[in-house]
Image 1 (cartoon, rainbow, N blue to C red):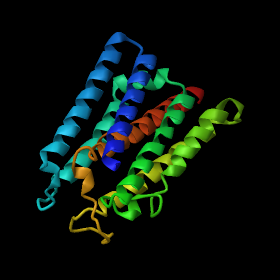
Image 2: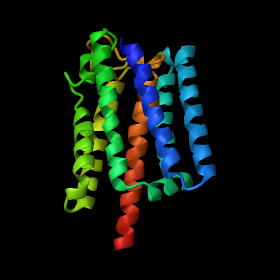
Image 3: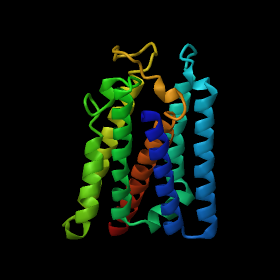
Length: 228
């Protein structure tokens, strides 16, 4: 069940991003570039998971550690690029916050994976993962946005909250893998994310969460500089 939901939820996130690219792209070139790179990234991450190359934790650093590093770096580079800057400028703050409500999906995914016996409990909202709060707050802010006073402060506060909770679950996930610095020793170890389709949890879901946060922070900083 969890593997099927992983595929469905990941495709939903990809569809959300493609719709966002289509709506807020400032040129046909930006739209084509964004869609092509996103789809290529989805294929590459799926291929890595299917190949089995990420499952070897004996090498130092493990292939999965390098993969996770690339997920974080590419999300930040995309947001910091001129392409990301144009999308940050064209997308309303409310939209960048509201899109983070998609984080209901990975939280449901992790719960199902735990019930299927492939994910450790600390990675779920039953354990140490509180990222469901981000999804709830994102949805609430998007709905109430027009009625909020001091919207910029709410956006900054949401950014700090969402990034902190994202860092929390990423850290827990890493410390649950069978690496020498493993902290959470309960079984199963976090190895399911090295296989397809679960590799899309970091490759699509975590990537998207960090990318959207980076875009929002870039937009807020630009607006702050403009006001000052």
